[in-house]
Amino acid sequence: MSGGVSESRHARNKRLVHGRLAALAEAGPAGAGAALRAAFHGEVEWRGAHPLNEMRGVEALERRVWAPLLRSFPDLERRDLILVGGAYEGRDYVAAVGHYCGTFREDWLGIPATGRAAFIRFGEVHEIRDGSIVQANCLWDILDLIRQAGLWPIAPSLGAEGMWPGPITGDGLRFADSDPGQSAASLAQTLAMHATLHAFTDRNAGAEALMAMPQREHWHPRMMWYGPAGIGTARGLRGFVDHHQLPFRTAFPRPTSSAEAGEIAAVRTAMGGGHYIRIGDGPFSVTGGWPSRVDRHAGPDFLGLPATGRIVGMRVMDFYLHDGGLIRENWVPLDLLDLLRQLGVDVLGRMRSHVRRAAGGA
Image 1: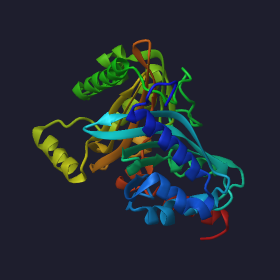
Image 2 (image 1 turned 90 degrees about the vertical axis):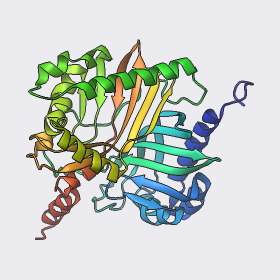
Image 3 (image 1 turned 30 degrees about the vertical axis):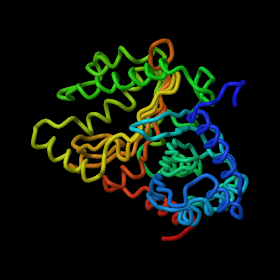
């Protein structure tokens, strides 16, 4: 019950996920198993950022993810900035953006411990069935933790690096039910903006063409675009175009022939690509896929790399805040380590090389 009014299943799901995942973060290694069983179905499908990747079942999740994480961060806690929920294609979801916070006491994933406070930025989408998480999609920004450890094994970011703030409106935790009309309008605006991006051909497109295209009708004049470590945060449409969109669309242009489009579509089908979530919750909307994009790396300069010609899939989530009839903020968890792996760049291997040299090794 909330304020004497019966809650919907979406409101119940949001409270359930928030409470159980907060308890998991603070469970410690000895309590991880019980906390995982309280939150997740025994045969949960868990999909995480590289190098954690995919696994099934709470035993694997405890052994490969949570027990090591909780040993490395013994005072871990979870801090949600956005928590929303809804249904898509008959499935119920809870989605969140935030940070895991703790003291980095022991090395994790080969990242050297700092002994200082550290923040692991996350975007997560959880499918709920009968009160349990049956599928978890967890894009944790492991590259940003590497940055906090004082290592940077790739080209400099074009955008600004640092922690992501919460929504400027201060209402990111949507525990109560939202107005259905507002929720639908938020998602509709996101999909309309996506349609403008899909319609743009990329042929001979420069920054001014991107600035002038119909996407500008959807973005707030003071928009913020929060990208993952390696890309960074951009301010305003000009910052978004200069610091992310132009380099990205140059590197991954739309297909120029039906044959190429067919080749990419075949790879997308083999990868199982497409969106698994598209929801609105009041002034927020969320989309995401595993992968949500499949493109050919056909142009130079994204992340400082030359074109490889490879077809790659991108694990991406988008969280949007709609304010004043426009998209005010966009948080974008993206598994950059996995994308770089597909492009032939072993970021964790580079990091280990840096650590060995710092230690005086070969």
